[in-house]
Image 1: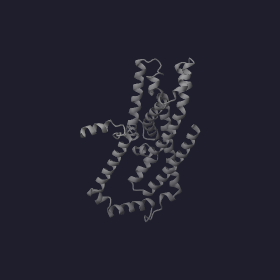
Image 2: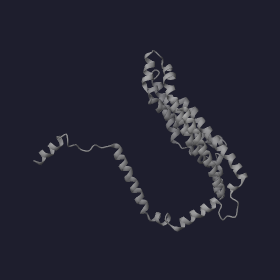
Image 3: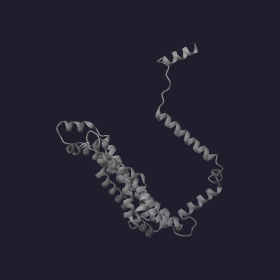
Length: 292
């Protein structure tokens, strides 16, 4: 009798098992992992002995005092006009490094992102459908994966063995990494384009190159330019890290100031860094509005 009731319950349309929602399960797993990690941290004897100790609070306060030049008896670097001008030159170099890096990335991505679009190279818009074009597609995607998989810092550490340390090495490192990022984003833009203008142009007898220049690029380029300016905002934040490996700019000076315990100079470098980051954010936002 119970088996019959069970079968009747399953066959009843009103009685349904709960559907598994991928997003809901993912959120639950993330919340569980966060809770487990914080539980482990808060119950760790090492964390309680170090993080919540008075010694850590005292060290943090001493470092903050040194950073602000309190009680040192020396005029802080951010109160000296000569220091502002010296670090300003380095800030300009850092800005130039970011512009060079994003310029290299944009040039490489513009030249390659069409070859990484599946619908252009292997889909209905492919030139000839040959194995050679499919090989170009695979190689382009592999190039995007390789360049963006290796961080800018690692690229810089490799490049300084070829080029002398300076903003050129840093710009090339930033450009190589972001070329893969922009190329992948550009390819995905092409793959997600509205197909109706393309089909309409094809129906009039237009060739594949005409379709690319008059239907694909006009749709893809505005979004590509938008991604370009977004990446510039990311690049300017990465320049100081790339500078740690003797690539020049504020990053190299930051490492030297920390090594010699010149904490007020560290504070001044961070102020200049904040200024150029905010400036790039404002300029990039304005240029994105123009592109839209």
